[in-house]
Image 1 (cartoon, rainbow, N blue to C red):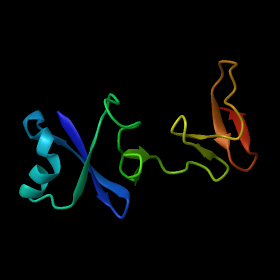
Image 2 (image 1 turned 90 degrees about the vertical axis):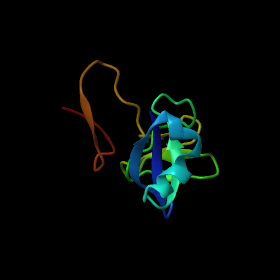
Image 3 (image 1 turned 60 degrees about the vertical axis):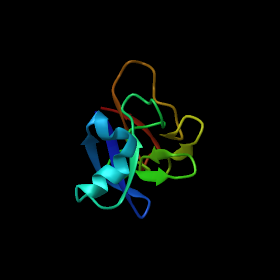
Amino acid sequence: MAHFAKIEDGLVTQVVVVDNSEELRGQEYLNSIGLEGTWVQTSYNANFGKKFAAIGDTYVASTGNFKSPQPFTSWKWNATDWVWKAPKDYPTDGKSYSWDEELIGWVEN
């Protein structure tokens, strides 16, 4: 099955599954069945693109990739790895941690 993301004002608003027989004409097919709009193919297994589209993601047309919303104000975008990065690395001591934006650090759960 092929997956397509609907793009409105640069944001993903819907993700649908399309039969493989309609993959090559995905946007045309979706528009023909009443799902009007701009549709971009996305891939679970990264056959193309860096991440599978999710509702609320931004579509970066210049790269053809989907970018998750910034999780915290202090986190910075890493375009090389295509992920948001915390200002401090996640601890590697095997314990579970959550990000605390007030402390700008990881706190043990």
